[in-house]
Length: 159
Length: 159
DNA sequence: TATTGTTATACTCTATAACTATA
DNA sequence: TATAGTTATAGAGTATAACAATA
Image (cartoon, rainbow over all chains, first blue to last red; front, side, top):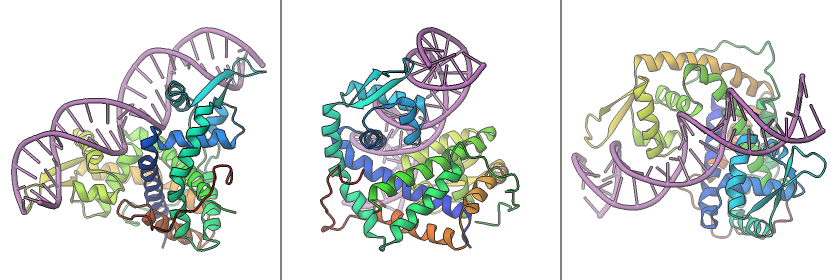
């Protein structure tokens, strides 16, 4: 019988494995795995998002993203300007150097992406993404657990 | 078409969602999500593992685990003794307080586990665990990517 | 009044390298 | 020689709360 704990453990193992491999691949370029995600989000997102929107798309936090941006701005990867219509907001964009770096990072990460696809049969990648997306949505901050969802396992049951 | 990047993004979203929900649930007990994993690993693992084995099972690192253990020992959750037959090694065990705390944490985390299972049809949980396990194994530190696994995507292809 | 972002702050996790002690 | 763990050290991500400026 598969339990919620089983899902949690293997989800953790897969994510941390991905994270470590990515760190190792990107480190020679002076970029972390999380910073890569930020660059990728900017690339896919039209290159000029507000910090808040950036945080949301990265499954991160405005305060965390700000700390990352300060580091990355110092390294010339991104630049921030005040939003054209909303003077409170700031838009974040890749610099030319940031775009170049991202292209190199994307290549450096290719073996990792290939490795994940390699162990999945045709169709399984789609299934995995579909199921993970459902779990991710269920755990999203905006969602609140349903009222009747309290079951009564005891600690000894699952292990 | 599902890409390796798609898997990475949704894997990240699911894991971080799980991690945040867990932090929120466990914080009132003064325990982090990662510390919960450590306690769970000890509970499931016979209650007396070496630090190295503990790190391996947690998908973590001996040095990281040591830092965590120092904190948790100070809080009376775990205790370490020298290994009975190998004087280099130290065994880690839950204290009575650690066991009590873990039982409370396990209950506190039940809604999260239920929430994940709730959005999956019968059989899908098994599928998810099976596919994730395969990906996790492929990304494990011990595994090295196959030699012929270099494809030639360019950055613009996938987004 | 609500929202965007900044600031200050603190803590945990992560990881490398050099080291000691033991197998 | 190899292994288990420690130490020192550094950095990154995470997040909260109080605050300013703007919508």
